[in-house]
Length: 492
Image (cartoon, rainbow, N blue to C red; front, side):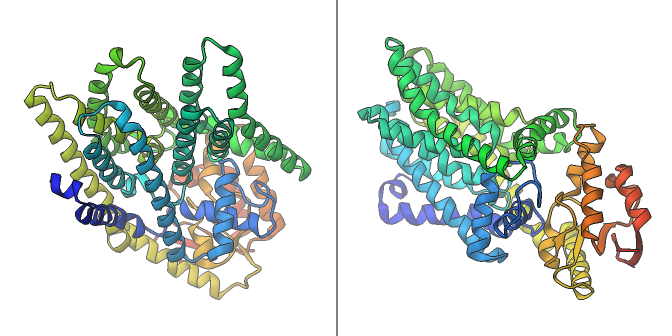
């Protein structure tokens, strides 16, 4: 094994093999995913619509900006999307490699070169499993590039105190915040360590701190101006931040997802990590002066804070914390030579078992693309989309009363409402968020005169709990075609 890691002729082919093995389920991820929500909203914005007015989802603007650019470059071609997203994953892997080469020697590990290469292999493996990547197109996947860019810029600044490097770190931090609001916590470790380094000179601390947050202030000012000039400032505020806060509250109540199933999936990875992190913290007292040790520990805490705080334990939320998690694994594996041999064996078994089980979970998504209920439902969706496409013209609007925006891509028709996913309407209505989305939705549908609505045939399904929307469909639409699981409703 040591020969594989130390000889470049073997090491880099091994990295590529692990990348392909762990990434293949992401490349074959089921067509029906959040990918199309971000893409659809970004596409409508790129085509001249007003974000959060023409198409709506509860995220800050940058994920839609990146998807709008992807639409301009590749249209709706999923193959090119996944090639592009794979290239972006290679960028953050390269950045992690640079981070590991910078941090691991400072952690005083006994074989820094071997530890650094091991960290890259572990990162490539965990970072590309489909339960953590989803389809590869979400805020966490993009965020990794800017998180690692922020950390590398900050560490370089700390070495030579060149202010422009802190500014670059601040630019990356501002991008993180406008990808997802709770990514704000990822900047907290830098703020804490700036204070630790400059506690004798508060002037320096505030000076560097102002440089770090200035790009965030400037970007926030731009977005406030942009949306205010389009009369959509309140829409921006609700969609980017306020709705997500209420979403987290609903998630903690169990109204968003089946947390038990998600936790069982996640704990296969998280339990071994928490064991490693507990051992990592054994060295905290003697490493109070080791900046890089503190940075890794603080990044773990901020990563756990922002992911657990959401209240809905989707594994892909934890992707953004993966760099710090991997550094903890490597620190424990290579540093604690005084651990009892049975404890070391237990740690290796826990990590190895977790990797095997996690790979199996990842591959299940690949299976879902070709077999089982997911594949059967996807084929039915394609059949419905073909029917709708054959009976409409490109300017006709439709609405899929289901989760996600997959149907709009399959049918090549746009949504009759800004709310492309029915789950948003259901959650807002059921948990009384107070935004009156149902009224807005009905107004949108009256305006667009959407020709078709695709709904579940079984009226006992979850989405029929939203009475105002269901009553609107009953009043304005009739069944035109029945499929196994869905009905196609046509406007009267």
